[in-house]
Image: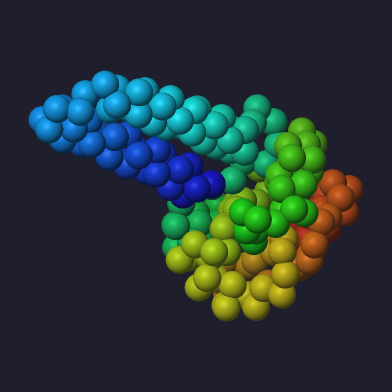
Length: 184
């Protein structure tokens, strides 16, 4: 999620920077009045884009309740899970996937689900179209989106997997069964 935010921010920054460069060039060449109007429009669009990218990022990653996803490399996530002796819960999503967005909006923000998952799993949301996501999708043989994996960090094997939209109760029950099974 941070990757998407930074990508949008970079795009807005480049638009703004290009406008500033164009303004400087056009001022040197003398066509100032046309540039001011163009510059105002460009800056306005860039600021609107920046606002929406920040709002979208905040909505998906900083909710007060619900599952908190670790924003780190896969290697760091595995290390953290091993150190804490927890399974990894991985949400394999794409930015264009409707059911993925529904999970983010309806399921992951649930307070009870978040409390349980944050306490018992190392949670990771990976965009399968990012560099790391492409690599992980071949390792874990992602068949569709969203794919929800429970992974043992010690051997990298999938312990449980859901394909498609999953209800809160289904996910919570599966998590509780996996935690109970590991304690035996």
